[in-house]
Structures are given as structure tokens and as C-alpha cells.
Length: 262
Image 1 (cartoon, rainbow, N blue to C red):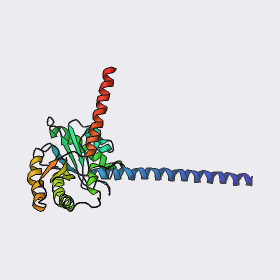
Image 2 (cartoon, rainbow, N blue to C red; image 1 turned 30 degrees about the vertical axis):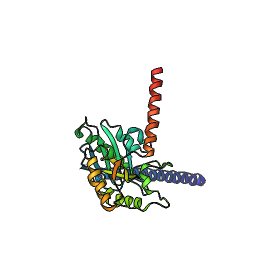
Image 3 (cartoon, rainbow, N blue to C red; image 1 turned 135 degrees about the horizontal axis):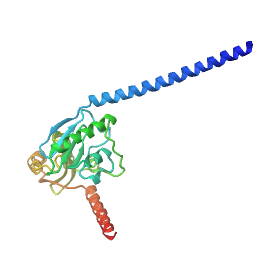
Image 4 (cartoon, rainbow, N blue to C red; image 1 turned 180 degrees about the vertical axis):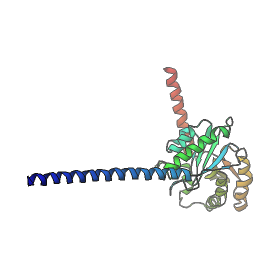
């Protein structure tokens, strides 16, 4: 009889211990998810996307109020949906009807639209997408590419680089780029041949009606003031863009041919 009582007490104590353990696990699980949910809601409420106009009426500058590119990642230009293979955010933005270009800077994103679409039709959708993305992601996720990009060409150290080219690059980096980026765009040095500086405009500058004026009166005048060897400035595509466009044209031609055959 005494042994049975002891066994009964042990069983009851075991059941109580198991019940308490289960209760602790349930409480921990509930509060951990509740905390995560509250943090996520707080992030969404505290996130504010500022919108600034640019000299280009078809481009707006969206600022999430923080750095959105990780250290070492250069700003990227996504002028077409096909160019967004390494960035899901740019791809999603291009899926919005009317968006014609996306430029991702260090602390801003420039969205360009087509002429036949008004900002009233796409502004709220762009804001919602950015709010949702940055409530989950601290930075823009861009796949690391092993091939050289157009924006990194200015960072390549060339042995025995000409002093004139060094001065041109320094002027573009220190005096011209910051001003262009304030307007939601960017300018990249591409080359210097026979007195002509070749640059690539990105972001809001790409389709801006005053881009030619910016090149001639702004960039060209400044470079010629400091570097007499500069005879002019022209906008060009870099080698990577030209190759990409050719490959895309081949792909489109191939798809069109296959669709006609089918």
C-alpha cells in the first residue's frame, strides 16, 4: 500500500512538471511572436518615405531617411526591366505600370515614369512597395556580380594613369557627382579621348529635358575651367551596356522567331 502511494505521488509530480514545462513553452512562444509582431508594426509606423521633385518632371526622388546600400556596394542604374536581374526591388518597381526607370543611390531611389502616365496614378503604389520592402529589409539586396559594372569603372586604379584623366575624375567625383545626386541622378566617367570626356548619365538625368544643358553648361564648363585640355563632354553608353543591349536584342529576335514558328 505504501509503495502504491509513493508511485502515485511520483506520477502526479511528473504530470505537474510536464504541464508546467508545456505552459512555459507556450508562454515563451506567444510572447516571442508578440514581440516580433510589435517590432514589425513599430518599424512600419516609424518608416517615412520622403519624396522630392527633380529637374526632370518624369522623375521623383524617394528617400527612406537612411542609407539603403551596404558598404562596398555602388549605386546602380536600372533603366529597363531586363537590367534588374540582380535586384528584386528594382524588378518589382519596374512591374508597376508606368515606371520606366529605377536608380538606386546610397540613401535614395529615383523613379522615372513614362510620359503618358501621371504621378497620381503610380505614386501611392510606389510608396506602398517601398514601405513594405524597407519594413522587412534594412538594405537593398543586390546580387554581387563578378563582372565589372559601369558604376565601378571609375574606381579601377590604372597604373601610369594620365594626370589629366586623374584631374577629370577627381573633379567629377568631388564637385559634379554630389550636385547631380542631389537631383536624383548620377554621372559616371567612361573615358577621355582626343580632348572629349565621355560620361554616362543615370537616374533622373537619363531622360531629363535639360540633360544636354547640364552637360554643356555645367559639366563641360567646369571641366574646361580647371582642365584646359578638355574640348567637350558627350554622353555615351559604356561597353557593358552596349553588350547587354546587343544580347537582349538577340534574345528578343530569337523569341519572336520561335513564336512565329509556333
